[in-house]
Image (cartoon, rainbow, N blue to C red; front, side):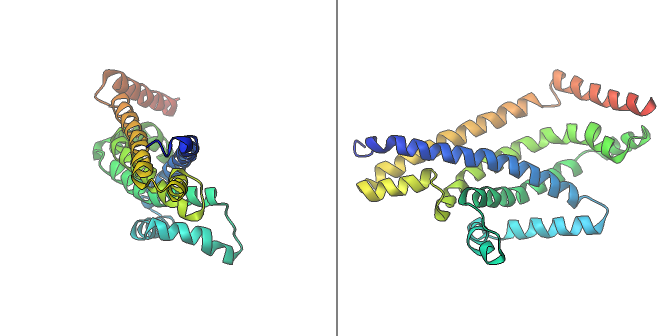
Length: 234
């Protein structure tokens, strides 16, 4: 262990890059997931079918292949991405494809009466989604999205293969320099676990915070639905 202590600041710098990748990837994943998930539910085939193709392609192929394609193949089409951008794009598209099914499943799981009640209030499709459907569906999305984010964190280790100097990339350099394989990879194993555990704790907190069974969350939901009804009547 003493062999890698001088390189610990280098590993921590790599950890910061991994955290930046994870944060950017999470934001992009959520955007992609909601866009693709809602498009898959559209009544318009020209919207629904491309979204379905996107989800099936990115779920059915390896993220490593997608990463290599974005970084090494796109330049042949005149598009050159910096390593960090290619990494975030690959992470967001791959995990967003899984997240799209979470969004679609949570919305479809809502009782039919919720939609019928919103229609009876003469809410527009946007108002139904904004004030009635999403406030009830999002709490159900939080636990599976927590798993997606942990998986995203673990997949950041692949970006070292496209020269992103993340935690794994720097760990491989330290190992080749010191030869302390067990100590280096044991250290980054602990670091990855700690970050994943913090993500799990954050997911649990959000789940409790937005649980519709809680009086505060239920009252907030009812107030939003009441305001939407008042808006329509006015």
